[in-house]
Image (tube, rainbow, N blue to C red):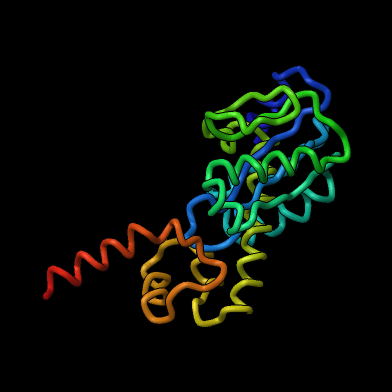
Length: 207
């Protein structure tokens, strides 16, 4: 844990924010991003890359990060925006919205990944940043948990797809539900084109 904080402190910046996303890969739902400014003198125990934590631990840290952060903002880009500008640009849009939504303007933004999203502040891209920086790890947790909550809401709207189980990712169960019910309004049609093409190919081969 302290290594993550040491990385942030090594940036020698008074107001540093971490930025990360959740939901680039799923076949359905909005993409989420979070920006977080953490106090450098207060370490949150157990803070880590969201992918390395249990759902229960993420939930607990989600509340603690929001409580202790100097400032945080969770933002989204919609399915319609994903379809219009593509997932990469929609992710960058969500990241910009998150940073612009902070109550304080950071001097530096540490962004998970290798491409800058066009933020209005000095940006450093950190590959696998959620495992290196406390601020990015905090952002990854906020984005992931917020998106999971959103997908649970979506599951109540469209119970037949069982979104609460797969969160929109391309699992076997999700594809089975797509075969049975077709697309819902929250599906990303562009993400399903290859699947439909493959199904057509398989059907043609059987004839």
